Image (cartoon, rainbow, N blue to C red):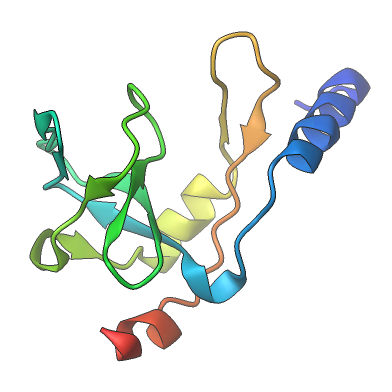
Length: 114
């Protein structure tokens, strides 16, 4: 349940983050991930954020590794059910205000480029 304070905190947090254009903002499910520190793969498919055409991004939850390489072979689009599920959730880092996950299910445009 959202309180007025949470809504205000979320608006303030969203102002600080500049969003990429929709064509570059892709949420997908992945299992395999490689960081310069090593293999940070997960056993079950997890939500990741991929930016641009090079399949590099980061996990939505976890320890906060940036510039993670997600091989195309182990990455897939979200199902409609997963989109609905994640669009109801929030993520929070430490004592920062929670941020709502917003998934736009328009990956077909992105997949044509790769």
